[in-house]
Image 1 (cartoon, one colour):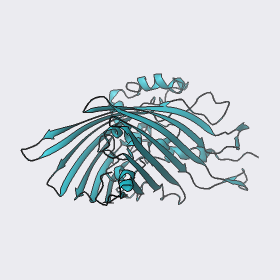
Image 2 (cartoon, one colour):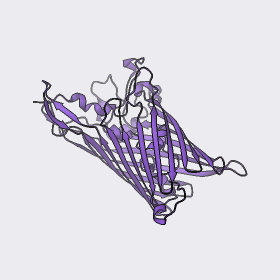
Image 3 (cartoon, one colour):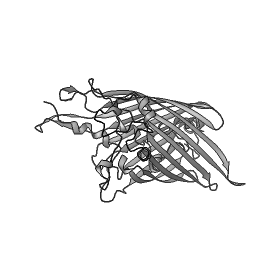
Image 4 (spheres, one colour):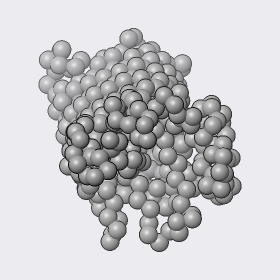
Length: 390
C-alpha cells in the first residue's frame, strides 16, 4: 500500500520557519519555494546572534558559509568551527543542524577552506491510508564544500567554492506508484571581500568592509526519475557591509548589515503551464530580478534585511544583538536575536538565542538556540595562552 506522506514531503518548505501573518490576505502571499532550503539556515551562533549578518563582518572559521573570500585575510594560520542548532523546537524535538567548518592558510595571500552541514529531520513514522504503521524513517540532508580564497590586492580578495548536496527525505517509499529516491546536486559559490582601514581621529582607526556572495548556483534537484519539473536550488545574491572600531584598548564595536535575494524564478499563480519552473538555473537566476507578477514592487519585497552589532571587552567577552526582516508576503520571518561569546587561548564559545516576537501567533522559529565552538589551532601548536582572535 502507498503511504500518504505527501504532507511530509512539504516539510522542507517549513524549514526556514515561514509563517504568514493572519492579517495578510492569502492572495497577497507568493513565497518562493526551493529544494534543500536548509542551505539558507545560518549555521553559526555568532551570526545567529547578529540577526544572520555574516557576509562582511570580520573573518572566522564560519566564513566558509557566509563569504569564503574573507579567509584570505585571516590572521591565524588555521581554525576549526563546530556548531549545533536544535531546529523548529516549537514543532518537534528531534530536528537539528550540525555544522563543521575549517580553513588553512596556504600562504600569506591565499587560503583553503572546507565545511560540512548535516541536517536531520528526526524520526518519521510512515502509515498507510488506514493509518496503520508501515515503518520508520530518518530523513536527512547534507552539504559538503571546498573553498579557495586569494588576495587580489592589499584590500580585495575573491573566492570560489564547490558544493555537493545530498537530500534523502523518503527514499524507498512511493507516491501514486512513483518511486521516491534520494536527490543529489552540485553547486558553486562566487564571492568577493573588500576591507580598508579608516582614520577616524589622530588616535583612533576604524575598519570598513564590503562583501558580495553568490551562493548555490548549480543544478536542479528531483526525488523521482520521472519528474518533468525539477526543483531549483536556493541560489542567492548577498551584499554585506560592516564597520569595526576600537573605542579604546579594552572595548571594540562592530556593526553589520546584509541584504539577500533569492536568484530563483518567482511563482506566477495565474500561469497554469507553470512555465517559471521550466527555466534553466542560469535563465531563472538572470530573470529573477524582473519576473515577479507584481512588478518591481514585488521584486523589492523579495529582499531580506539583516542588521547586527557585536561588542567585545578586552577581546575576551562579547555581547551581540541583531534583527532579521522578511516581507509578510514572502514568508514573514521577523525576529530579534541576542547572544554572547567567551574567548580564551585556543577556544572561543558562542551562544545565540532567537527572541520570540510573534505575539499571539507563534512562529516555529521562536526560542531557537545555537551553540558554537571555534578553535585556533595555530595558537595551540605554539602553546600560546594569551587571548586569541579567531
